[in-house]
Structure formats: C-alpha cells, structure tokens
Amino acid sequence: MLGEGILKGLGETARNFAGSFVSAERLTTVQYPEERIAPIEATRDFPFLVYDGTDWEAGMRCVACQICEKECPPKCIYIVKSTDKKPDALGKPQIYPARFDIDISVCMSCQICVEVCPFEAIKMDTEFELSTADRFGGLLYDKKELSKSNEHFHKIHPTEAAEVDARLAEEKVKADAKAKAAATAAAAKAAAAPVAAKPASPPASSVVPAPEGEKKG
Amino acid sequence: MSTSGFVQEKDKHEGWNRPPLIEPDGEGELLEVAMGPHHPSTHGVFRMYVALDGERVIRLKPVFGYLHRNHEKLAEGMSYLASMPFTDRLDYICPLTNNWAYALAVEKLTGQEVPERAEYLRVILGELTRVVNHASAIGFLIQEMGASGTPLMYAFREREKILDLFEALTGARMMVNYMRFGGCRVDATPAWLDGVRKVLAGLPQFADEFERLLRGNEILMARTQGVGILRPELAVNAGITGPMLRASGVNYDIRKVDSYGIYNRFKFRVPLGDHGDIYDRFMIRLLEMRESFGILEQALKDIPAGPIMDPKAKLRGFRPKPGEAYGRIEAPKGELGFYLISDGGPNPYRYRIRPPSLINLTVLEDMCLGSNVADVVLIFGSVDIVLGEVDR
Image 1 (cartoon, rainbow over the protein chains, first blue to last red):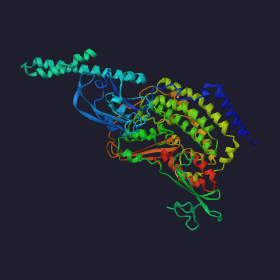
Image 2 (cartoon, rainbow over the protein chains, first blue to last red; image 1 turned 180 degrees about the horizontal axis):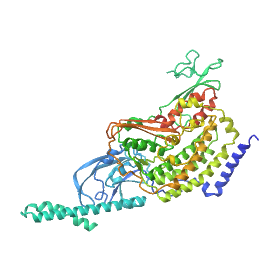
Image 3 (cartoon, chains in turn orange, red; image 1 turned 180 degrees about the vertical axis):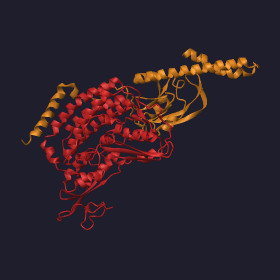
Image 4 (spheres, rainbow over the protein chains, first blue to last red; image 1 turned 30 degrees about the vertical axis):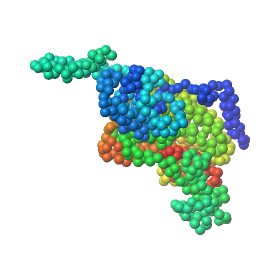
C-alpha cells in the first residue's frame, strides 16, 4: 500500500514523542544554566599551574624549563625565565618563571603540555565558563591567574591527582636516597681528607637537603 | 575564470575545465547558479557553480578551499607529536580514526609495535566512531531531504551517548588527541568498558528504530532511488573509497584488504550495494553500522589486560630514520591515509594526507549531471563529506 512506510515512520515518531514524557532515557535535554549534567572526571579544557602548599608563588612547581612552550602545537604559552634562583617547595634553589602567560583564546585544549611536563607542574582544568568582555587582556592569563592549588587538582581530577602524588612521592624518596648517599659519600670523603679546613663548605651545602627530605618524607 | 551570473551561448564553455558531458536541449539560456559557500544545506563552506537548463543540471563545478588551514605545511614545521591534535580537526565528526591513521603512519616510519590492549582499544574506539559517523551522516542526509530534524535528532541522541564515552576516556568529546605512536594515551578502566557494553546493548534497537523510521518511507524512496548513480567503473577509476564505493558494488574494504591492526581477528561482512544510487549509500551505512556492533561485541569480549604503550616508544624528541611511510585505514568515510617522509630530523620532511572526503567529492559532477537541481543537495549529502578534511 502506498504510504505504508510513511505511516510506519510516523508511528515511530509518535512512540518517541510519547516516550519522552514517561521515559527518562528518552528525555536527554538539560536546561543548562539552571540544571547541569554531572561532570565527567576526565574532562579537560584549559591548563593551569599547580602549586604545593598555600602560597602560590613559593609553592609553584614550574621551573621554567620551557618544554611545554616548545611543544605547544598552537604556540599559546609564553615563558620568561628568571635570572635568579628561588627555593621551591622542597627548599631546593630553582629557576622559576618570571613570566608565564597562556593565551586561552589560542589554546586548543590538546593536553600536550601536560604530557611533556617532567615536573607535573601543568595540569588541565575543567572550568569552562570563562567568557569575558575584554577580548585582548581578558583571555591572556598570567601566572597568578593560572596558579591553582594541588587541592584544586585533587578536587577536579581525583584519580589522576592521586597517581601524580604517588609518583612525586616516589621520586622524592629516590631523590632523598640519592642526596643521602651523596651526603654520606661527601662526609666520608671529608673525613678521609687530610686537610680538615678545606672541604668545609661544599659538603655543608650537599648535606643540607638530606635532613630536610627526611623531615618531609 | 568567468563568474558572471548568466552563461552566454558563445562563451558557455569558458571557465569550466572540460567540455560539457551532456548537452542542453537547445531552447532558452543556461542559468548559472552559485550554491554556497553559505548555503544552509551544504555541510560547511563549500561552493558549487551549477549551470542549469531549466531544472536540469548541465554542468557543476565544485569550489573548495574556504576552510584551508595550511595543515600539511604547518605539520612540517612541528614535531611529530604536535601534529596529533591537529589531525582531530580534519574530519571532526570522527577524530579517533584520524588519530589512528596518523599514529599508524608514524609507527610504520619508526618501526614501533603496538601492544595488544592498545590495538583492541583502537578497534573499539574506531568502530564507535564509525557508528557515530554513519548515524549522523544518515541524519544529515535525511535532513537535506526536508525531514527537518527528527531523524537527525534520533541519530544525535545516540551520538551523545558515545561522545560521553569518548569524554570519559579521552577527556574530550570531539578533539580527543588520544592515540600515541606505539599505543594509546590513557588506559580504559573496567567501568568504562562496562559503559561501552551498556551503550552497545542499546544500539541495535536504535538501528532498528532508525530503519523502521526511514527504510520503507515512500518519499525517501522516490527521492533517492535511481538518483545520483555512480557506476562502479567510474568509482574505481576516480579512486572512490568507503561506503560510496561499496554502494556501487565494488568489494573493497581496507579492513579486509589490508587488515591493519588486528582486523583479521574479527568476523564481519562487507555490505555491498548494487545500484550505486543514494538509497544504496544510505542502506550501506545502516548495514555497516550493524556490522560495527558485531565487531565491537567481539572486541569487548576478547580485550586482554596488559600495557597500552610500547615501552620503547618516545613521546617527544625522537628522530625517525630517513625514509617514507604510508599509513592507511578504513575511516568511516573511506580510505584515510597519511604519507610521511622523514629526512632524519625531528619534524616530518613532507606530510601529506589522502582525505577520503576530497577524493569522493571529485565525482560530484558526474553524479549530478542530468538530475534536477533539488537533487544536487541530496547527492552532495550522500557523499558524506566534512569540509575540515576536504580543505585541510
């Protein structure tokens, strides 16, 4: 019969239409600003800089190695290295970024900066309501705006953050062991050396990190 | 190049690249119409100059390049890794297959092995992508016929579920940047695999529903059967691949022919059409979706535990030996290939993409000649292109 196929199709539409009133599965639309769907944990959008502790400047993990700047596909990261060194969260003197800007309007959320970072210093955020009226400065984030605490990272990506923390702790244990070994070797060398006055300053500096590390670990 | 509105009798061949394949009936003037680049029915920014004799299409000239992004040249200036997120943006409906093809080419170039689990993950994601692509391609095709939204929304409802899976695994719905040279970026959790099983359980029902909604529809049949016929000889000569080629009855599926990855382990059939018209292309996509469900079931059953990255693989700073490699896969739209030449540096010396959309579009004029102008949009839709891949 001509028109049978159309009627069958209309029947299907009617079934879906009626179903959307009774079945939650058929009702997929969410009225966005008032209602929100549950966030998915792996979601990413723009990068942020992780800091340990409470002070963003003192605890910043970034050491301005500029690998992310080099690997960034759309080249949206701008880093200026500092000329001096500042103690990082572990108390070790490190170069820090004098300037660290990310142009969010250029960033394409590809996560490559996160993958290449050897210091776990840059991670992906989930904040997406970032619209601004200032189209030049408003989307160019400096290091203060980019800095977010490790607690924030734990809040948005708990699984990944736990892995990162475990990895960092492991590295720290290794580094401590190494520093300790170096310290004992230096001490042994100092003891073995016939002139006591001469090696006084170099071992002192290398001995310092070990007790510090023990305290934290 | 003549872009005048009316084509005069004396210069009607001017501006066209070849002599007319069919002659106008000789009465009245030809009317040259520019469809696009912002025509609501084109999938992106694409322009067609159509010369009409009444309603009949006498000539058709595609004009593309409006979305050119210099992707190939850019890739020569950046590391192998940095091009990976840009491949997502080629065919943005199915980014995971683009990732896969590029990863395959680099793996051939560097000789990296992909672990079992990563291969299975690639197959699962690739087939989910095929479902997404075919469902939305059919939806768009029907929408171009005038069914304003209903089939497309049904397709997008299912697509949404699959995109949620993509997001849960890769972190992004579309711009996934997931595959790496020698494996995949993050491992799938058992919960994610259960999620895939759950979505997959609902998909055959969706395909049934979709088929009931459309297959027997008399309007759809009247508009698509016998329209836009692509002959198998022309399809083979023009290098057409994918569902377009198979709808013309040519049995060529790279998953079978090349069996890249682990496709030789799965049992699936290659649906073939025998008319090569729009209806066949539509049906081929429906049938391929069903075959994909089968592959997904098998892959989810057999997926082994283990690493997902080649331990020798380096993320950055590697320099492949001088040489060349061509990695190709059966993307949902056809053969997607990446051709790379290395001169031993950290960047590719030459980076070339063989996009299925562009090559499938080359026969647009041959399919449209002689048909009504209203069918041009439909034929164009049945090619299933994404302009991001055509222009690159």
